[in-house]
Image (cartoon, rainbow, N blue to C red; front, side):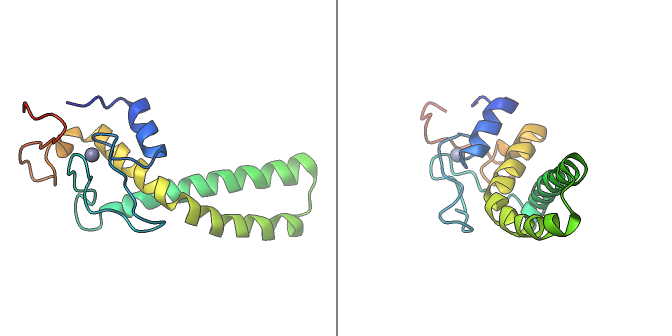
Length: 137
Ligand SMILES: [Zn+2]
């Protein structure tokens, strides 16, 4: 079984790679996700609506950094609110688009770490783990 430590899963997510094998690419384009891993055949969308959870990663990261930036700029450097809000509003839109793929990759890694049994089968049905990289299985 491949190693799935938090550091390994984090690295795989930041490289936008499959959480199970670390080899297959998650995305074919900016928003287009491959259905399965090209290496280990893991089905990425584990269930209908599966990636709804990734919005928590995207929303949480965006609001935390925006709030920190606002507090630092307004209370730390006395920048007026009307100078801060337009750039931060722009940041909220652009950053969520940029972070979309990473939020999905982090969601997959999070799920793989906290519910690893679901990742033993290719599509979460409980079937045997199929890994084309290890033919002795
Ligand atoms: Zn894979």
